[in-house]
Amino acid sequence: MTLPASARPGTEPGTTKVLVVEDDPGVAAQLVRALTRGGYAVDQVSTGAAALSHGHPDVVLLDLGLPDTDGVQVCRQLRQRSQAAIIVVTAFGEESDRVSALDAGADDYLVKPFGLNELLARIRAVLRRIRPDGDVIRHGPLTVDLRTRKVLVDGAEVALTPKEFDILECLAADPGRVQSRTDILEAAWDANWYGPTKVLDVHMTSLRRKLGVAGLIETVYGHGFRLAETLAE
Ligand code: CA
Image 1 (cartoon, rainbow, N blue to C red):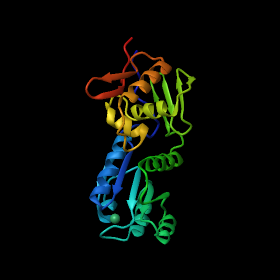
Image 2: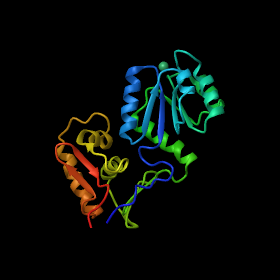
Image 3: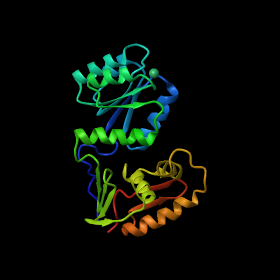
């Protein structure tokens, strides 16, 4: 059987564009990496001027402390010219900036330092508000609801453990793309996993058995795992 193109109305993995506006190269690189791994198409700029002249992102992650312009001003101008969801990022203690940014049209805010899982959750939340069905990934017989964390196979609910769900979420974010063992471990066990990677195999075996669809999760030897783009007859 051939799987239809992965359907995630309005938010197909890899096609939701996130613009990171951040002038600190280290922070920017970390954000770009996390968002790319989360299945988003990511661009990054370092100034307010570049943010305002940049294409048509779906989500803008806007650091308010920019070298060239007032971040709140950038937020206001973005809101005037774009439908993008805007999440502003501020340093601890800049409460007045956050209030100004929300008044200027920001959809949400994050206070540094924040966890990457929190960032991804906030992005899903703003996308959900602008695209109510955007949190459901459909791929062949599989339906993954990221908000309720429910998984269906051919319409029947499959009960997964939290770890199994996290692994599946990582794979389903971009069907066909190989996720390395490290990427999956970092996604399911959070940023710094130094334990044995054998634990991943145990959960993967259990996940495959519960899903019960032969060939759905492919092992790519020496690389990692991926969700099959198409299934054999
Ligand atoms: Ca900054």
